[in-house]
Length: 161
Length: 445
Image 1 (cartoon, each protein chain N blue to C red):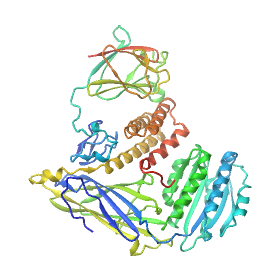
Image 2: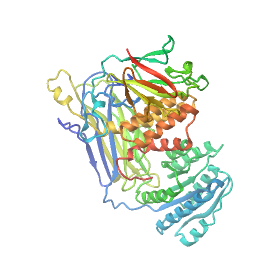
Image 3: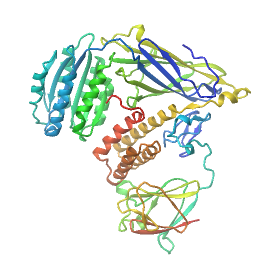
Image 4: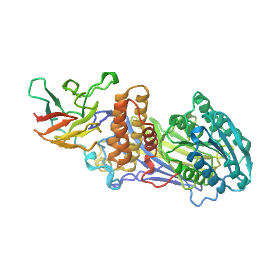
C-alpha cells in the first residue's frame, strides 16, 4: 500500500496519483520529470512534512470564550455555520456575531505548510483583511504571530502558541 | 510481439507496433517491479493512430443534420445555424448523402436523404427555417435516424449532427434507447448544446452510446467553426468503429480504462472470450486516440510476466470484423525482480515516464468532477463544494488557471446558494473533459 502524504488516503502499491486530492504519490521508482515541467519538485519530494502542525489562537476579544484555539493539522475553513444549508465550517464565527459582521458561510481558509501559517480568502463577499490590507481571493498569504486579521468586519488577532 | 526487457537508466522504453493501417504505441509505467504477493498497480498509455500515407480510401458520408428550431433559437442562434449548414453543404462531395431535419415539439424533414444535393436549393430551404415551439429531442432524433437509415449503404460512414439549445423533458429514456440503437447500427452522433440551458449529462450519455461526442458551444459565433471541425474530421475517417480487445495475463486484473484524447471519458469494457472489449469510436486520419489503462498485478514472482495483450482493429461500415491489414496487437510484459538480488538496485532505479502521471492527473480531475456532480445531485452540497475546491487547487497546479478560477468561483457559488451557475456548470464539465487537449493543439471538436 502507499499513503498520500497530503490527505493520507491509502492506495494499492505503485499507484501514482491520489484520487482523493490529486497529489502525486511518492513513487518507489522516481518519475522522469525532465520532460514534465508541470510537476513541481515539491510535489515529488517523498519526505512528508514531519514537523508538528502549529497551534493558533484566534482572539476576537480579551474575555474568556472570545477566542478559538485550533491545531493546523489540516486545512480549516473559517466561516459562519448555517445548519439549514448544512454548512459547518471548522472555525465557526456564528457565535461571535458572524452574521452581523458580514462573515460568509465559507469565508477563508487557514492551513499550514512547512511550519508556515497560511490564510486564503475564499471569494468572500465582504473580504478578508490581513493587517488592514484586503486579500486577493484564492491567493494564499503567510500569517505571523500578532498579525491582525479581519473577517468581514470582525477583527481577529492571531497568536501562535 | 513480446517485448524484450532491456535494462535502461532512461526510463521505460515505449513499445511500438506499426502495421499497414494502424500505428500503436504503448508507454508503460514499469518494465520491472519487485516480486511480491501484494497487489501492484501497472499503467499503460496506449495511442492509436492511422498511418499517414494511408490509401485506404475515404468513406462516403451519410450525414443527417438535426436542428432545434424552438423559440429560444430565434435571432442570432438560428442565423448562426443557417451559416454553419451552408458551410457543411459546401464541403460535401457528390457521393455524399445529406438529409436535414428540424424539430421543436415535432419534427419536420426539410431535406429527405439524398445524394448529389443541389446546393442552391438546400441553402434556400435552410434560410426558411422559422423558430417556434418547445424542445423535444426524441422527435428530432427519431426523424434524423430514419433519414440516416434511408441513406445508409454498405460503405457509408453514417453520422448524425444534432444541435439543440433547450432542455428536453420526459423523453430522456427514449433518447438514450435510440442512441444505443444508433450505435448498434453503425450510426455515430455529434451532439451539440448551444448556450447554457440544456442537459449535458443526457447528451454525454447519448454520445457515449452511439460512439460519438457531445460538444458545448458557448456562443453562436462558434457554431460554424464547430460544424466545420466535425466535417473535416469525418472526411478523414476510414472506419466507423475502432475496437479494442484487452486480454489480461495470469494473476492480472484490468482495473479501469479511460480515453485521454480526443477527450477524457470512461471506457466501458465488456467481457468476451477474447478478453475485455470496448468500441473507441471514430478514428480520423489526423487524429489520435489515447487510452490510459490501469492493471493490477497479483503475486508477482521473479521473471517475466505477461500483463496483457492488446488488440486494436477497425470495423468496416457493414459491421463485420476488420481484415487482417487493419488489426494490430501489442503484448505488455513486466519483469519481476527479487529484492534480494544484488542487481535489483539498478533496475529499481528506472524512471516512470512523465506522460503517465500527467494523463493520470487529468483522469483524477475528471473523477473529482464526476463525484462533485454526484454529490450535488444527492444534495451533499458540502462534499460537492470540497471536491470542486480540490479540483481548483489541482487545476491551478497544472497551469489550468482559467478553469481553476472557474471551479473556485463555482465552489463559492455552490456553498452560498446550493447550486452551480448554468454557465459554470457547462464550462467545468466540458473543461475537465478537454484537459488532455491543452498541450496538444487542435483536435476534433
